[in-house]
Amino acid sequence: PATPERARLARAFDAIARHESALVAPLLAFLHDRRGVRVLGEPSADPARRVPTVAFTVEGHRASEFPPRLDARQVAVRYGHFYAQRAIDALGLLEHDGVVRVSMAHYNTPAEVTRLIEGLDAVLPS
Image (cartoon, rainbow, N blue to C red; front, side, top):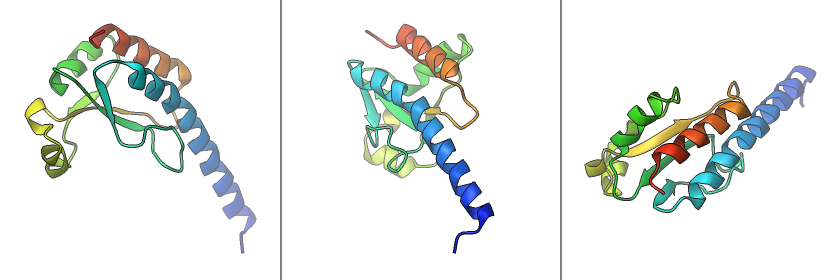
């Protein structure tokens, strides 16, 4: 049986999941609409199907090209295999320095996601 504390905790986690889903949705929409960008994993922001961590590749570019360009804009993304070297290698991405990864969490804001998308819009090929 659910205790009041457990119910409060469940509501808190549900609120966090909804917030994170709202954060990742515009990023996924932007990346899916961008030519040459391939998002790995679930394409939707449904919190039952994905966490707010997005890995993507850009056709004709190494993943390592993008973090320094975004760092200069005060936007933090990283690249690599993220301890999944065999999976990244099996996908043929290791030779392109892996994937670009963006991670968001409950403490991020919609304004930060907007700044991320604006930064990506400026550095990704059109």
